[in-house]
Image 1 (cartoon, one colour):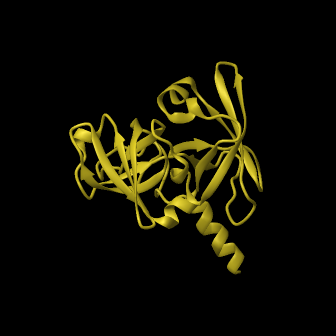
Image 2: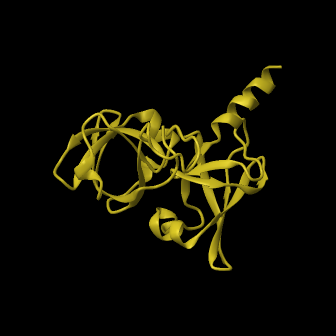
Image 3: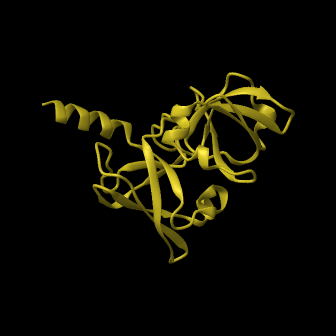
Length: 195
């Protein structure tokens, strides 16, 4: 389980295909603290560390289903990703419940600088996933609060710290992002549709 509070950024070093799987090599400040079999969220996608290359880089593997459902398959060498290790049992719960299971892709509709912060508006396909005003949403692994919500979109406000310490600073109109909708909201919606 994760909280959506990003620890650091990683940079893609290498991509190696093996059948329908893809091995991603990343360089990151937390690499020296990682171990094989550890779960790490990459742009909000929970992946297992399969190999340590050195004190600054490591390898994770994504299966075909993960590549189809997320933006990981669109990464290019040199791209940066948001990283978060799983939450320790005795740690603070600073964000919200994030599973590292991306529900669907979203697209950046607009980026607007406003009063020292940034407003990002996103769209997504209509379906069983939705946001509510002041509800939680995870975008590329970042825990945020949605507003101006609709069946197919929402807006979030990004403070300068988050803009500078996550890959939100690189997002532009038309970019795809990983969306994980609020787990409690998903369960409530599923229960209500079965009534």
